[in-house]
Length: 225
Image (cartoon, rainbow, N blue to C red; front, side, top):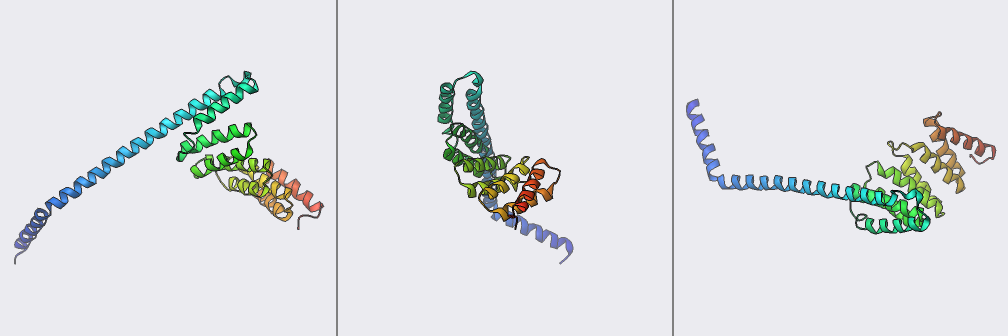
């Protein structure tokens, strides 16, 4: 068989293959196009819902804080109650909307000295957006709430999570707080190690310098071993 004949035969086979499977190919193409359209629509809906949620949060925050400097405590509490009521529909959402809604909720609870409720909201905020800038902020404030509740072990764990986030601008503050809470709990060796690691990373940082003073104090008191 000549090369030209072989090419003709191969061409006929290909045409035959396409012809016999034309319906399957058409259906597959339609399904693929439908999937692409569905993905686009889904993305648009998600983005619209996200924008709507963030807009609602901005509105709630504005209503809460606008002109608040001149309000008495009863008026402030009324605004806080109204904000919490509006936020309730957003705190259950996922992603950045849910994270920010829980963040604002936590701030209000903390102002009301409802530290357990604030802690729950900060924890939810961190968990809903674990890779965003919100997470370390939430963990640090969660540590503050746990301290208010006398839960020092939980506070230390939260401060460490905040400190371990390399993008957290207050990372050294969180690292010092981690060591401080360990020290308050009588875990002097662990506290000394935490202070030492902080000082070793950046001796010129103000919190690292403070950590160094605590290391010296623990050594003088015989608690560094």
